[in-house]
Length: 406
Ligand code: CTP
Image 1 (cartoon, helix red, strand yellow):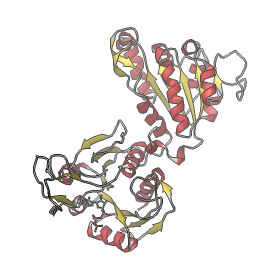
Image 2 (cartoon, helix red, strand yellow; image 1 turned 90 degrees about the vertical axis):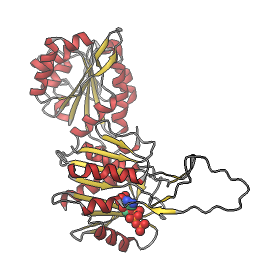
Image 3 (tube, helix red, strand yellow; image 1 turned 135 degrees about the horizontal axis):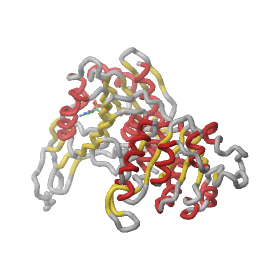
Image 4 (cartoon, helix red, strand yellow; image 1 turned 30 degrees about the horizontal axis):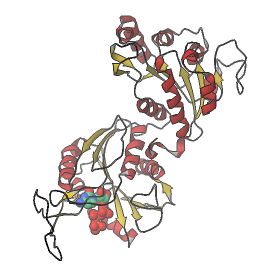
């Protein structure tokens, strides 16, 4: 799992995982692992047919507890005789993945003839369903209708993927990518205080070419921005990421615009900004670009030294601040090696920001390439806070809390 998925707030949150009898059942083991890696506590139910594809022992061995099977077999360790009611009392979210056509039909009509369908019926919290089946079964009018009914019943529906399925057919019906199911599950455990907000995040370094093979850049990994983007997605925002070159993976439901140079990042951001509610600039933008030598490789010949000339790049955040309209909010970052608080205050003011998070990149546990940051946070209302060294995920979560309060 990518580090920007691990938010402390999910620690110990209880998820109930329902698994039904599809060839995709083996992928629910990876889903279980991902949920456990996100620090959730997971219980599971396998239908009788699911247990033909994967075993309860595999779920137990990976850490699911309890693991329920048939209604009338002995209660699993950690469970009681009222297993059909327990997830509804204990778990905060129920996710059924994979859900077969039969299970969709049962859920849509409130049938309760086995452990999983009883548990779903008795579950009062958010329910997520991710189907997997043959494309012709998926396309059948009965399944289409059941799928619509599940929407009316308030299920969060994770659309199946398209492609080859086990039986050789091609079409819709493959279990969705696990990341999509995981994100919907974590969303159900998160406040939706950014719902309806369109958020723009810049992240990563920029790369300024000099000759055919060389460029000017910096070691930003983009992690802080990825954490902010992920936290915003989980809290309900519609997120657009303008990313310089990074190796990171981004949430599947974020729009990603990939750029290379500061100029490209500037143009992409200014195009997008009028349609955004919140802008968040974490990118380590190169302030200067070398005056290009050209598309050829510069040959060293016999020279002793080399002088490269630089010209300024646009300040993207400042440009966003200058065109900020009422209701739009802007968050900036400041990477400093001295005068942290003074520089943060100066940038907050000169770039017309609502909130700035500044860190001293010369300190251990802060800055480029670290999983943590130590932040001084200042907002336009004058609130000033110094936060301890925190994982970047926590910094991101707190910044969204902070902006909401402001
Ligand atoms: N920023 C930007 N465009 C630039 C430079 C910076 O959008 N050309 C943004 C960064 O993403 C960050 C904030 O401005 O949110 C501050 O960046 P920082 O590098 O700390 O400061 P600079 O504005 O470059 O100023 P200085 O070089 O004086 O520290």
